[in-house]
Length: 275
Image (cartoon, rainbow, N blue to C red; front, side, top):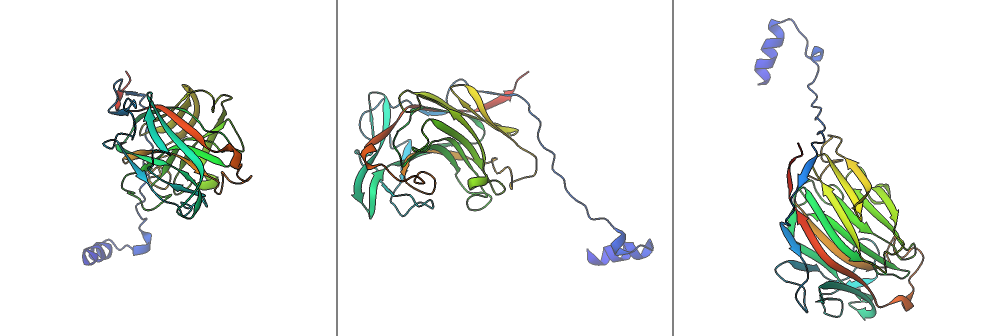
């Protein structure tokens, strides 16, 4: 190829530095007003009793801080995670285990989705030092390790700042303290169930709390550094204790045990654009 290019340049009397390099500028997608299915493609209504359905859920286990200086050891013990009366309950306890001073659960869906609507109806824990989250991570880390392959936090709340609930998107360009984030105050976040929802299309990630739009992050067409959200993601739900955010104001041990209760989880497929 190099010989052919040289010959063409000589025959035209050109110089190699006259040629302008080809620069690919991706096109940002347009908002096609995609619809979403009305029947979940993956869900759990938590109708069993005892251990969560092992065909639908697995766990991240252990301690070590989880990259956030967290203080809990995650278990799959019935004392930390159980199903009954139509509700999944995740409980954080003041309990020494695995070198950590607290126990909790981080449950991970075996179902995953690329684009669609994700709904979780939940009542959040309370207490200084708690850090509950309902969030999504990629299945295969297509663009490399965190944050390059993305993370979406459908719900996060820290106990020292109760009722201020956050929706965030992380990627290679915007992550950690620089993540794209919106916040809504929900006065009854820890005393009543609320619907936490993500609508995810090729155009944007939008977050809704009780069907009220609180967050919008639009695909700018610059590829994975700002939009790694074109791959399968799965759901995680947990209560962390302490940590780089949750523990900023310390941990109130009198708050434990404290629980997050989940009424249901629904994944809906993205359908055709609305006409």
